[in-house]
Image (tube, rainbow, N blue to C red; front, side, top):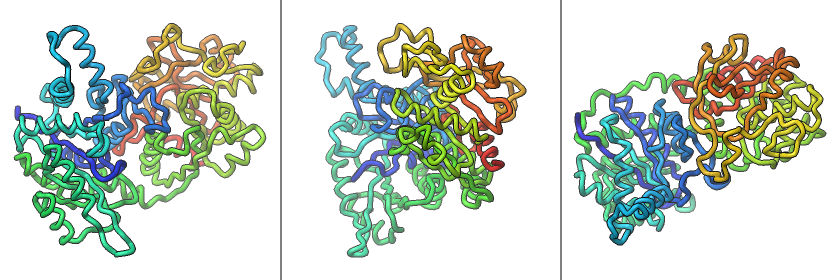
Length: 534
């Protein structure tokens, strides 16, 4: 089998230019041309993984099938490629140093002084190659977090320099994404920031092979030629990525800019026929030409940063397109909701989703939102903590267990309808210790969940410590809140529904992690369908 090819994506001038979307878009195009592709993210922070990070710090924590807590960019990779990622697809500085220090403690370095070069850079290179080992992929795209010039990124940039020298130009190339700002006062797009960014990269020993210029306005050929000349790249290797209304347009823009062709030619790979991307274009056509419109309230406590709920927001886009429906997300802060104002805060909504989260802040607002949806027959979707809030609400107001709560919030409650999982009770460390990754669930046939999935056995991803307390199983079932999804090994309740309600589904797992452009998640699809009918 042919040698694996490696593509590195770096960023310059400023952060948040969209390296993740660029990497996912390029991977999508290469995949459409018949190549097997995966994407890896190298994060320069010292946390071992983002699992312990506050969502305000870094957005949502995305969970892979094999239980890794990873950067939210891995969600973009999966949504674009429709291929699952794994533990190997996200590497942090913390994980690199942890591994090197563990080797030093074992004596693996035979008493040598442990240094950034070669020990840290060797470990980074090993991790980069690990994801491409076993000949599973033709091409590995590695996105390097941060911005060129950051102190934190230096070991990664040095590792790329070494790999480029070791592998040769035809097996390894660097794409540098920069910003070309437009100055309204002069009516010009300015290339100087890009020139300085490339200069920074050159000082660190790397000549980029391709430049992708993020811009608000289309760039003239003269501007592109100027960049090519001053940055020492081929003219056809200067590509623009212009601001678009949806991230899902970026692959088509990169196709028109011939980015995939340029990459394949530089890697010495056959270009083949231009991909049709039929399903992708159909998705965009439906997305841009909706026949319906619904307002869905997303009730959470991190709504100031929508990236905290990135996968949920994207799942609504996928499900909305399939239903030919514009989904207007109304972000509602759960701390602002009380029993007295809940009807005012949630009025005019066609559906309510109560989002995942941890801790006591805003919990009563989420419980009030669940009650409002239940009593007013409004489609309700509770995810993880959102399911648990619905259970607490039902216990208090239907089962009349007034002090019912989760022991996460009130460890002294006499009615712990949500309780700490048995295997979690002896665990003190926070990082990577939850119930993580994919688990089976058996679904009852007479349920909304079965209507959505159209099968009785599913596998979904989890990220939680607390669970429905099976002591109350019969009380809930007899009073109309039915456990319709059960884990066959542990007997844990995975899905709760309210009988007779238009659409009231709470799930302990995270369906948003599995939704992609080509395969929207069935629960989101059915929820939006119920919202349209409402």
